[in-house]
Length: 120
Image 1 (tube, rainbow, N blue to C red):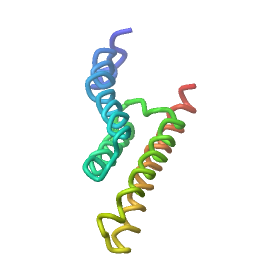
Image 2: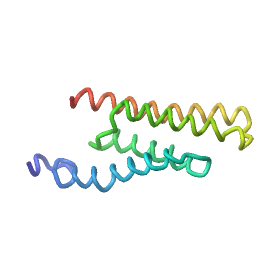
Image 3: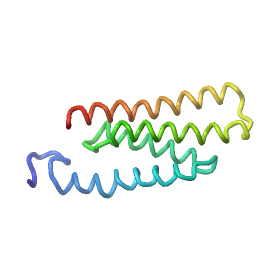
């Protein structure tokens, strides 16, 4: 289709770059890291989820399907729950961190639901 406007992402080449060079590597890293989630990669996983949410919120980047985001969240929380107590966090930190994790996934899930409902 080519270009349909003057905007930076109103062009197939730009959208392909965003999808293939930016979005897809983030998604693939999240998927890979979740397979061996531990305290060593947990912060990187949740940071990648946050960056993906920002991309999907600010740019025309397609979020993963809602069921995939939900599966990621379940997997992340299973892993986090396995190791967090071993790190001896204060109860306040643990509660705040859990809230941040949930909020991060909920943000991506909301974007996913909106995108996929509008593009079904």
